[in-house]
Amino acid sequence: DHLVRAGARYLRVHATLMASGVTYYVFLALAPVTLLLVAVAGLVLRGDPLLQDELLDALRDAVPGETGDSLAETVTTAVESATTFGLLGLLGVVFIGLAAMDKLRIGMDIVWRGRADPPQFLADRARDLLSLFWFGVAGALSIALTTGATSIAGRVFGLTEVDEAPGFFLLARTLPIVLAVAGDVLLFLWLLRGVPGTPFGYRQLMPGAFFGAGGFEALKLVGSLYLAVIG
Image (spheres, rainbow, N blue to C red):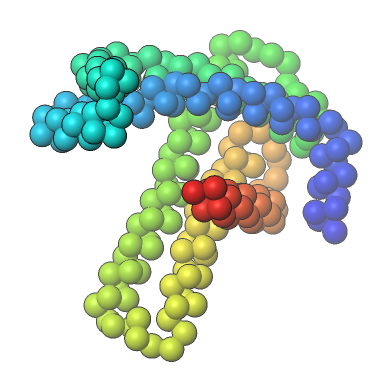
């Protein structure tokens, strides 16, 4: 019943159009995020000349000729300009992230209350910047909860030799999914409560957070299966 009414409300306020606006900025963010990843990789390689040489040699071996030399030169340039790439990527992520949070806030306000608040440039930018920061914190906590708890559980299983017990395979397969859903629930709960001006409490928002987490995990599962097929 909750899902049916939520879907009807979503369609009635034309939320698909607002979602497309958020998706547009998220897609644009791929470029600065790539710059950030390049910067991080460049800083790592700059601190390890041996690893850098091994990477360049592997590139030349994998792609012989002028193309391999060109790729090696590109990697060398990226390593030397890692700081510049990092600053440009960070500025791009902040700028595009603010635009995405603005669209997300307006869209969720319309879904929740039927209208958005009157625009206030400075106040809106400050609020979006704070929301973007806490979104990053919530995302980091979600990832830490999933990876950290899974790693600790693996060590505990190894020390106790519980992997020899009947049913361990099912437990080992289920635990990462449960932890991932728990992390996703934390992330979606913050999105539903922290971004829009909703009058509802965390308890009332919990079903929506679980639904979003389940859908997100389903998308990740489909994506992993697709990559396994094409790989």
